[in-house]
Image: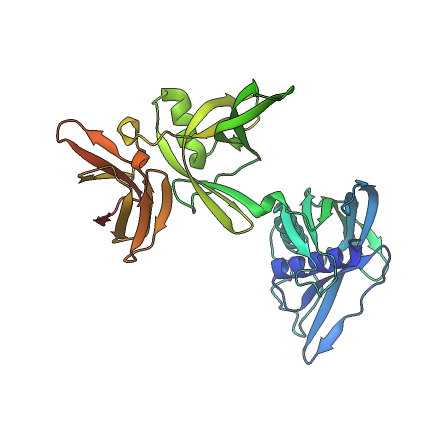
Length: 378
């Protein structure tokens, strides 16, 4: 099972990186500990802020997979006078002439900054053969101060307590291992909840020689349902909700554990929720769009190209872009690295017939818009 010592060492490492002070360190003990003695190195002294990490509640999910949840408490005593870590007493941690105890604020701010990031991680990070690896999710509240008092080995100080919720699963995949982006992979959506689904279009009948009703799937539909806050990154979804412009297509990038799938989708059933002083939320479904670019509306920055060919016989389309971009063409959604030839295999259904010219048309939709060179091979 997951051990608390590994979690304590990870918190200790992260907090010390956040504090960024070579002469002042956090040291976290599990369940019980002691005051760490200062370490003198030439003219400086390394001092420690000791903490105790302990569980207050736990739950085992009781499945075939080792999984559960812990409630943890991390307690510190923060000295109010800054510890002297240099012989001349002019270390940057000394209290400044302001109306606040700056050292206390510095420590609280560092702890809050570290724990404000809901984290997911693997333990151990690089397991040996036969050692179980756990997917761990961590979420915490802000550091809470206590009553200023005199503490043995510290002097005048204030308690600091952090309440932490932790869930774990052996060989699990944490939700933070997945992400959703729109238009480009860098434009990540701040997803609160996500649900992916694929439903079949079924034909059901009682077949010859059978006494049971059975089904066969003739098609399927993919949908991505998201719950989001309303931010500048989700404004395009709000625009559709407010204006109702139809068939505004987007590249949607879904990545899980490093594997990325690109979809060509439109927003469906967006809904906005707001209440009192709460932040506004959005619920939206993304569904795949039909491969008929004559009906597509494009967001700003996208560019549409077309190429005419003599027939709709299957063939290969060679593409080269001046800059990195993403291309939708028929059933294909691919990345075009700058200057590198990419070949798309096209089927008969990927072509549209132009009645005016008597030729068949292949449409390319590109984002970000850039110059494309294309060559056709039968």
